[in-house]
Length: 209
Image (tube, rainbow, N blue to C red):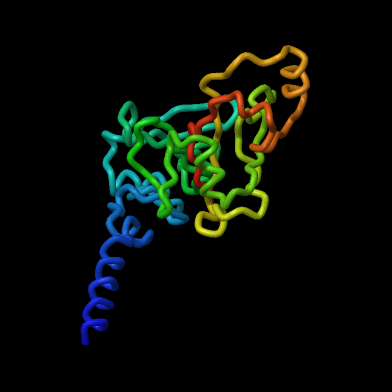
């Protein structure tokens, strides 16, 4: 009886001190969740007309990018700012090409807590320790864009997730070593020169599967 009582005490103590990973997912506000459905209330299946009905014209603004084409900003100039890029080159816009989460203070995150501003080192941890491949920061097109996860964990729980990495600071680097590094079109996160770079996830990009 004495040992049974002690066993129960230990069991309940361990249970109380072992928070489950899924608890955070259960308590995450659906309006802030990044998933293969979309970002909060903005869904990948939405048309421009859908956004007008759900959110109202006052939070929508139109822009054009010379490379990516027409896009719609939602909640511009706020931490909730999203950019929605369209397949169509002219209105009516009916097909979302991708959604970008761009603000460093954005409250959105995935079910496993990936958010804008996360360091490359932490992103690799989320990828199960596998390298992340991305376009070099010096590339003429798509600098910093993530190109692959090398059979890591991120695509298993977030198959629609992409993004853009940005270097924010660096330690001194030998000029010849720097030239060799910049000559690579794509690089992996385990490149030794990146140990002297501060790199963060500056954009989360969500695309249809």
